[in-house]
Image (cartoon, rainbow, N blue to C red; front, side):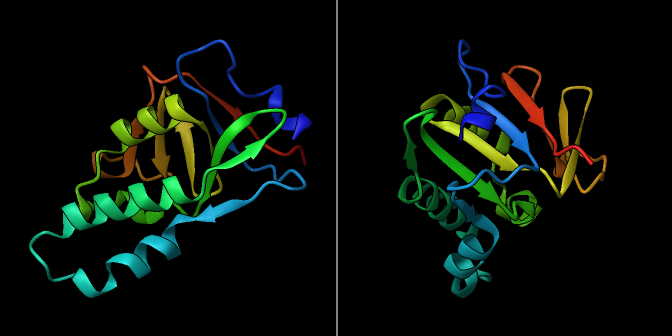
Length: 144
């Protein structure tokens, strides 16, 4: 994990890193699959947003790992489902809280970061973005 440590904002309130790099030994949690499985039987339930919110919090808390170099971290991938408008997830609040509690590492193959916002799959729209202007973050891409 030494290769990622240099990219993680250490002396800041948030520890958030968007990356395409997969360091040896780092475990990425597929939140897309886990959340889809957790809410599958509740898709028509009027309480779907609350069910999804509880499910994603449980997924994150159960998948926190520890590394001697970076401390407690959660590395997530396949995040597209988090932007699903029907789930009404406040991703800004989620990313802010998670990156205050742990180092949050997000696989950034599904989107772009532009002008302080993360846009899912390049789709510039409010339902498919997270404003990161007040969340300390860094970006690390593999060099080609």
